[in-house]
Amino acid sequence: MTVQTVSGFAVETDLAYDLERHMWVSRQDSGVVRIGMDPLGLETSGTLAQLSFRPDGGVTRGEPFGSLEAEKFVGPLVSPLSGRILAVNESAMADPGLVERDPYGQGWFIEIAPARLAEELAMLTHGAEAIVEQFGRKIRQYRIEGVLAE
Amino acid sequence: MSPSALRVIDFGRVAPLRSQTLWHAIAHGVSAGAPPTLSLMQPDAPYVSIGFHRRLEEIDQAHCRRAGLPVYRRMVGGGPVYLDEGQLFFQITLPLDMVTAVRARAVRDALAPAVEAFRAVGIDASVEKQGDVVVGDRKISGHGAGQIEQAVVVVGNLISRFDHAAAARTVDTPDQETRDEFEALMRRYLLPTPADPIAFASAATRAYGSALGLDPEVGRLNGYEEEKLAEVDGDFLDEGWLRGHPRIPPNVWHVKVKAGVLLLRATDGASHAQVSVAGGRIVRARLTDPELNGAAAVTEDSLAGLTVSQGRAALSALGSAGDRLGSLLHEIERVARA
Image 1 (cartoon, each protein chain N blue to C red):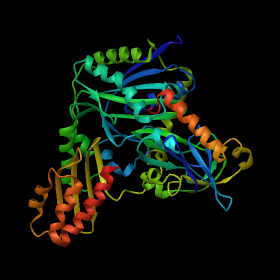
Image 2: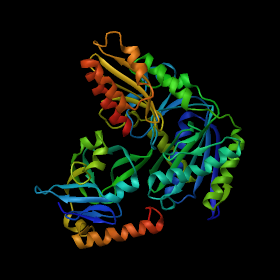
Image 3: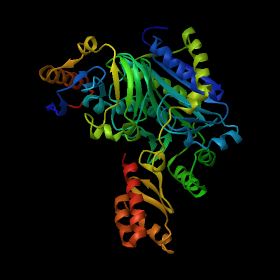
Image 4: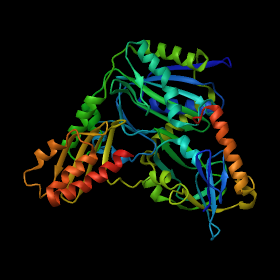
């Protein structure tokens, strides 16, 4: 795992990211893809109180696969990829703090069998240089918009 | 309706079901292009609502059935709440792109005009960092928020009168003493604020219009929203929807009265530890252990005012009973901190 600090945020650069939906994607050796939340998603959500994932079935890129509640605000978790849900992280559902404590490790959300991996991975941000550059840009944008403190 | 309009819909008195489904339908409507909307309504009978992620088992369903209280699951956050004719509900529904991505700020921004409305009717309200609308340290409005498709809705209420006993009765508690403690905490920290609902609605209309830079215009549901309303009515009456997704019961039973005010109870066999916590300090404790040997009352009194962590340390002097109870307080502390 290679982690770089980008404007104060720890970013794992061996993954791929959907920066608009604040999700990271990790390809496992078995061909399964694991999905979790990136640090900007955690920052803007606040303290996670509840997580819920669809237990199975298909997911489509851009569509919800679950929901998150923080600050009494319920919102969708939107999938960066299409595929079939193989597993959900019951530990994270039971203890959402796990996601904040270990967002890239034990705090994953779901595992899927991807349906259009090559095509959809190309839409994500990957490679250390691109990840650092685009995270930095996103953070600057959020600071200008007042989403993040300067 | 003009493009710079804040649509205002006051539904007046409606059935309990409609006091939930109307604003869910509006959220779908705003997502589909209807203008930002301030909606208001009062239920014409009492009922219970549970937040999107919560377990139905948190509610005393048998009591609700006997008392004829409907139970509805809403699509915003928060826990089980008792709602009745003494409350005026308000909701502000905005397109997603009008709302900051920072959830805590989104909630506070959305409730700030409501706070102005409370003040306009003589209630010295403020909004806390966690989003609770308060007078001093007492909560005066319940709130929740949610994204429904491409709209965000934030809900709150003017509570002119509140039946604390009836509300406590609807929550599933381990025993009557726990329920009594829950009721006592609500009486202390949940303050009804009698005010003219018409005056509040007018003030809220002005405040939201000003905050959003929009001109309030009286409106109504559009055709799409009427269709969605019928659909949402059906969803809310569906048993599967009410049951919700299966969720693992927490190790520590707990109920929150407001941010920082909780009642928690942990059990391990014949040992029980129950604490009410406010502002990080134990208000009251109730301890049971086979080896306390008559020391329970004194021990409980000694914990008042301590943090839960300090309470754990204090219990270590009680030998094996203290160890067991300390472990339970450790579990309680973890939940209280979350």
